[in-house]
Every structure is written in C-alpha cells, then in structure tokens.
Amino acid sequence: MADKKARITVDGIDQTIELPVLTGTAGQDVIDVRTLGSHGVFTYDPGFMSTGSCESAITYIDGEAGVLLHRGYKIADLAENSDYLETCYLLLYGELPSSEQKAEFVETVKNHTMVSESMQKFLDGFRNDAHPMAIMVGLVGALSAFYQDHMDINDPKHREIAAFRLISKMPTLAAMCYKYSKGQPTMYPRNDLSYAENFLHMMFATPCEDYKVNPVFAKAMDRIFILHADHEQNASTSTVRLAGSSGANPFACIAAGFVTLWGPAHGGANEAVLTMLEEIGDESKIDEFIAKAKDKNDPFRLMGFGHRVYKNFDPRAKVMRETCDQVLAELGQSDDPMLKIAKRLEKIALEDPYFVERKLYPNVDFYSGIIMKAIGIPTSMFTVIFAMARTVGWISHWNEMISGSYKIGRPRQLYVGHTERDYPTKK
Ligand code: CMC
Image 1 (cartoon, rainbow, N blue to C red):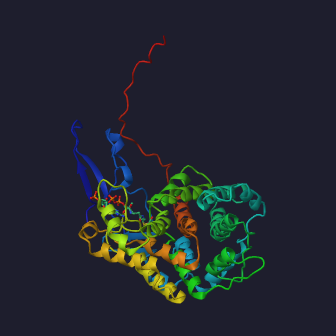
Image 2: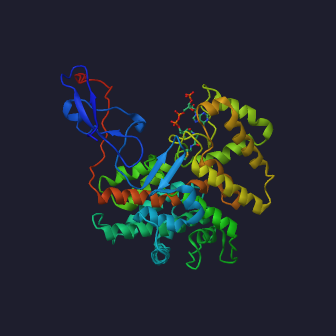
Image 3: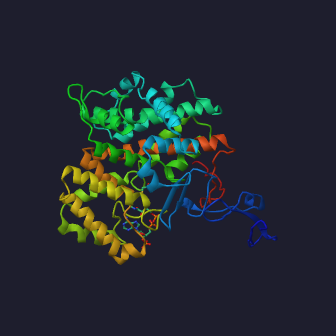
C-alpha cells in the first residue's frame, strides 16, 4: 500500500502542506505534524485531545471497545493468571518471564526493599498530619539524594538498578508514611513475604504484634497493583516522560509523576469516591447527588465515573468489581451501607440517560476505594497506593524513552497577551 499522506491548506500559505500519516500495529493512524513548523504554522491542542506525544510499545488502550493490553496481553488475563511482579517484569522487559527469570526478578526486588536508615530522619521532619502524598513527593524525590551511585541515565544497567530500587522501595516508603501519620514505629520489610503481603505487614504489624495477612486481602491488594500498573500516556506518565526528556534523574522524574497523580481528576479520584460516599451517607440522598452531578451550574461530579479514554466499561473496573465482592464476602460486609450506596449509584449511572449518553461508566477507582476501605486502609493512603503500583509503568515509559531517540519536550502556545508596547515613562 502506498504511503498514506494528509494534505492541509492554510489561508495565507500558498502551497498545500503534505504530511506523512503513520500507522501503528493497532489503533488509529496519526498525522505526523513534525514538519509543520517549517511552514510557519503549528497545531493547537490543549489537553492533548488529538495529539500523540510519543511512539510506545508498552500499553494499548481502545477506549471505545473497553480494551486494555499490556505488551499485547489483556488486563483481565494478567489479573487472572499473573501476579504484580510478573506484570512488572512484562512491562519492563516486554515479555512474560520464564519461571527462572521470575525467581531471579523477585529475588532482586527483595534485595532492594530496605531504605537508607537516614530516610527515617528525613521523614521525621514532616508534620504528622501532612497528607501522605505530600510526604511521598518529598521522600521519592529525596531518593536521588540517597542513591547517587547508579544515576547515569545513558547506561542501561544504571537504569535497570533505578527501576529495581523504585519498585522495591515504594511499598516501604508508603508504609513508612502511614506509620508516621499514626505515630507508630516504622516496620521493616519482610522478604519471606510476597510483594502484597509484605506491604500489608509493613502497614498493619507493630513491633509488639504481628499481623496475620489474610490471603483474600493479599490477593485483592495484588490485583489493585496489577490493575494500576500502567495506563498508556496519561497525565502522570506524560509528566514523567516530559521531566525525563530534560535528562533529569529517574527518582526526580517519578516524584513528578506522584505530583501529577495526586490531582482529583487523576489518581486522587479513589479517595474522592470514598469522601463522596461518606457525604451521601444514606440511600435517601442519592437522588439529590445525582441531580447535582447533572446540573451544569454545579461543579460537582460523580467521583469514580467517566474516563478521558474509556467510553465503554473500564476493563479494570470489571475485575475490580469482582474482587470487591470477594473481599466484602470474606468480611461478611455485603450489607455495608456504603456498599449499598455504591451499588445504587452504579445502577443509576448505567441506566440514567445523562450518564448513558455521555458514556460515563464506573471506573477502576470506584471499586478500588471500597476494597481498600474494607481492608482497613485509610482513604488518605489510596492515592499513594495507586502511585506505588503505577511506579513500574512510569519507569517503563521513562526507560523506553531514554533508550530510544527523544527530544526535550517543549510544547508551543497560542499567544493571546499584549503585543510589544512602550514601557511607560516614570513620573
Ligand atoms: N459526573 C457528572 N458528569 C460528568 C462526569 C462525572 N463524573 N464526568 C464527565 N461528566 C460530563 C461533563 O460534565 C460533560 O458533560 P457535557 O458534555 O454536558 O458538558 C461530559 O460528561 C464530558 O466530560 P469531560 O469533562 O469533557 O470529559 P473528560 O474526558 O475531559 O473527563 C474525567 C474525564 C475522568 C476527568 C471526568 O469524567 C471526571 O471528572 N470524572 C470524575 C473523576 C474521576 O473519577 N476520575 C478518575 C479517572 S480514572 C483514573 C485514571 O485513569 O486516572
């Protein structure tokens, strides 16, 4: 097939501008506008609604069909058959590991779970009531001050070590934040436990009392990690790529990812879902909140509904819903009033023309918040857990970018300010 081209004409520019059309292995074709600038115009696309920022072979999403693939594998198959660390291996290296590769990978992750003891002193400088995401932004950024020995971003081995350090230390840092907010001593990691079990141990054990990890909770946690591991070029991943494009070190780039994920329109939504369910409080108030969500003059939105990319059921939400049922059944909480509100909201959103017409389906955050609350994790830690799981996605994208050819990210603007004017004479 002949190479596809796009042609545009612009008033004031004599010739028709011809642009190459690129075809990926799946998804829509893209118009390569890189040469547009040489014709004296460029594109305008705030929010990147129609703009691809990079070439990537990690994750594919078809939002209309509700498809999410990591390295070609369906998210539901990974959630069913793999664990989180296997998913990390897949994202980082492109293939599922053999059993030997998996064992070696898990061993290496375990070798890096402790953090420098001096980090505890750094942590002690924060206020106890600080939001854990605020502390995490500081701790993750500070990793670059504690682990300076392998920071040559052009050396693949150094990049791999940074990836291991980030994946391994993230649960330790997250649990440290939680313990700090509770005024409890930090629990050291236990390398005889799985990734998810170790996280729950560091969260809930104390030096005077062990925490027996419930296997249903550990499985649910692991699924939450898998389902949040990567999600293509979302706001935080794009931030990590943009930060990395300047040559910044990986720890600083991941800290930038944390900052972006914190917002309520992105990773902060799972916390916002719980706050909203608590605010609704009673089934009798649901209609009032639905009316607020539909009211154009009210900024309120139904948290946990809608997605920039999925205009169909979020495939992660399907798995989360199933896991949510399992955790609540284990706890005998299927009658929980908050869950009843959540189920009613879900039903309304799937039937009400406002939500149906706008394709506002429940997203992954809608269910993950309920699961984490049931496990005993406070809402303020929800976004931290999302970020912890997403770290592997961020570092995989960063690594993919650095190992290929890239330019510093530098968007343009449509300037609407004053044109040049005379400086006023001072009286
Ligand atoms: N409740 C009520 N109305 C909504 C909602 C909602 N949650 N989401 C979108 N709408 C309406 C919106 O008012 C607009 O209506 P109209 O066309 O009449 O003006 C229409 O749906 C399209 O909305 P949009 O803002 O153009 O959609 P977007 O793709 O820019 O926004 C979103 C996507 C996720 C920011 C948005 O749906 C939202 O704010 N949802 C609630 C927050 C949330 O759950 N976020 C988690 C996203 S999933 C986690 C992740 O992957 O990061």
